[in-house]
Image (cartoon, rainbow, N blue to C red; front, side, top):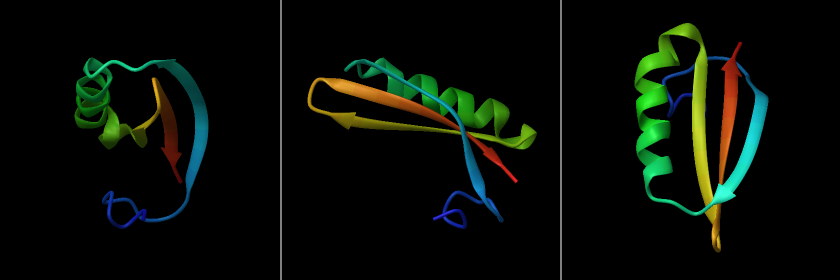
Length: 60
């Protein structure tokens, strides 16, 4: 999975937060990944029912 993200090594979860589902969160996560991947941070988003969770990972 890490190789799919262009990351070698381990991903460590820094934080996660669940919100009411909102399509804008996908755009926010895309923006954050494009802006902060070079600094070693990767952001993920998942949807479950009416909730969406954003997870911040630090690449080691």
